Amino acid sequence: MAKTSMDAVLKRRMAASQQASELHASDDAYQQIFQRAPPPVPAQICELPLDKLDSFFTADIGFKLYPPIKLKAFAQQLQEEGVLIRIIVRRIPGTDRYEILAGHNRVEAAKINGWAAIGAEIVEADNARAITIATVTNLIQRQDLSIMERGKAYKALLDAKNQQGHRFDLGDETSGENRQKYSARALVAEFFGVTEYKIRKVIRLTQLIPELQDILEKTPKQLNLACANLMADYDAESQAAFVEICSVEGYRLNKSTMQYIVRVCPPPAAQEQAVFAAWREARAKEEKKLTAPPKKITFDRRKFAPYLDKLGSDREIEALFLQFLRERAKAAIIA
Image 1 (cartoon, helix red, strand yellow):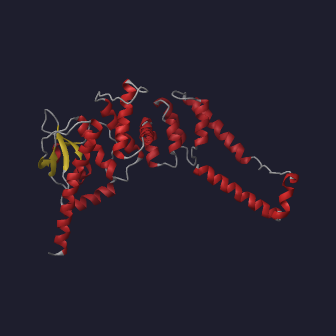
Image 2: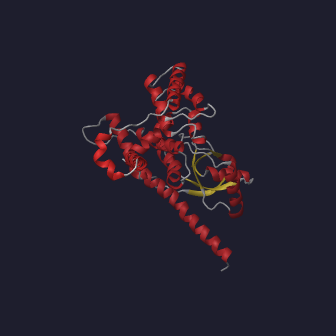
Image 3: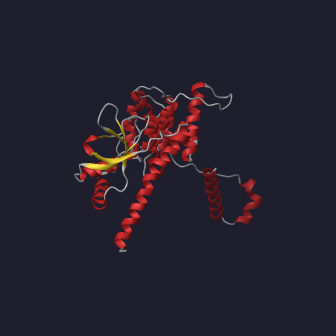
């Protein structure tokens, strides 16, 4: 068999395996998180018209399409190889249309190529299963997801789980809604092999207004995670002030400045002018500190007398002391 033919066979075998794994992984998550078995109805395989497909709308899962250059390259790949992995959809009740659960980039690439239809699997899915299919494969396989995309995907799963209305017996220390939320987060964390703390951390960032989310994703040097985490405690109106602060050219907001703002203007609500005033005060303090003359460190030589003769010159003592400080600083960071 020619090498090109062998490569094509291997690609299709790998694609078939991945096709099965997409639904398999999603249904594993569906069973573990929602404690339900997927419908026994097998998926219907067919070709669907592109103009009958709607983007996923059941929940805001945050995933974005490939950037234009990558999408164009992907379209070229599909033009050469065809769609090796079918998209996954579900019927939209009362219509002849379908909601895309997995395969948005494949659909957009097919449109670029001018195709009229695309290979699809039509599945039976309630909202919980639809959200699971739409999030799980991306969360597991895509390493390029932004922190906001991960946060929104986890949040969609947790929201769907909490809407399920089930309660779990986790002990006397939790009850009612808190018990249910704890259970949902624990189940999601266990399936994806992450900590509950990590899930809480990324979901917290979804409380940022869209403008701040955009800055965090596109220009992280202007808004680091530590500052974004503190901003998320404020309401939308208060957060608008931080958009302007993060947009100041040549300036980077740091954690100490943000902590000062939080102390002066505690969340959840703060007037915009008060936030700006606190920010200017914090900047003034930082600039004053930077321009202040350096402090000279002195020692009582009598206390060090038993050791000085053994250590050598003052320069050698200074070098030894600097090395000690570096090691202490490094130990503090590790701790």
